[in-house]
Length: 121
Image 1 (cartoon, rainbow, N blue to C red):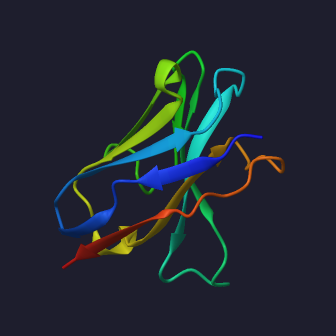
Image 2: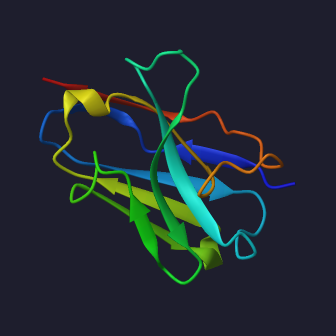
């Protein structure tokens, strides 16, 4: 079973940048699409995660409209790692960011601990 661990979050001012990493304990090469999700601080119900972006094994990407042009997702299968480069961050991007399979989370891949992103105004 693949285990995921996210990192790279932190506190940044509005307009700043962060790069998140998601490292899998096993190979992700067989997982066609990997994605990033987030649990916004303002999300209701509080446990709801929303889709942010996904990348397929051949590099195809999909973005939520709210992050298009600001976030870039990529993956390195040799390192079993998925990245999310975020720029022009806004306070409304504040939340906990997770990775999982895509376009919907895979039921057989447990959620990792997530990484907190806080954007101050």
